[in-house]
Length: 334
View (cartoon, rainbow, N blue to C red):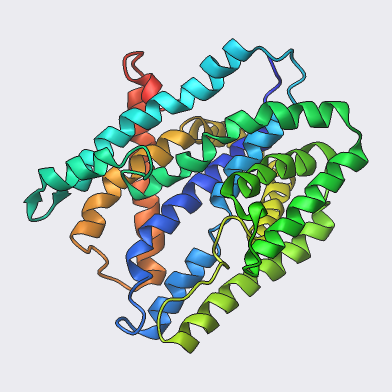
């Protein structure tokens, strides 16, 4: 049994909350010129400051799996790792295909069926897109794990630097074979290993770089949008660009630093929420549905976004906990 890494609980909790933030503020993104500029800027800034969430989840996966020194067993790996995520994803995809047909006007069975038919190539609900690039990473992990175990520190860091260069090319729309999402998302596995195992880059470098990247991301999205007269992000809010990678690495390193300052009691509470972080990810759109469907955004974004984030995260956590209590449903929230 591997020793539990406590600061991963901190990271899973903050990343789960950040994902909910992104989805709570979703309706505001296309309100440029419709709602007051101050409110739109607030919502967009929340969005800019939350884009690290998904990369952090992938970095945790890389940090855990690439440091695993146990003998690799294909059967166990497929059953325990891939199967644990794939089966719940398929079941929830069917459920959300049904939910896609539900609206305040009633149920559109044709829309739900068309959504379900597109399952092999397109997510059935907005948050499930994550699994289309996350699940293929399980096929990359064994190769990266072999690499870090058989090559030295310099080779590992060199590969990480190559990946960071590719994210830079992608940010500035210099595309090629390196722009494939499997290449760019796979790098987060290695980057998580580097920040965790090698403590590279160190926090003293990541903190200023991450803050600059965070502010630059928001500034570029806001300036591009006002210049175009509509919501324009370019690739600044992509998960596959240098700015997002630096922000995610900063959050990752900060998570370790903060966890070292927390009491055991606080860490225990965070561990409870961490246990259900994937459940929060899977379930929160159910509770967000009426908020978005009936436009329950009745106060300025600076109040509404935190308010609904807390409520929906709490409801999704409670629902995940309830499902996990029974062996018949626990597999739905792995």
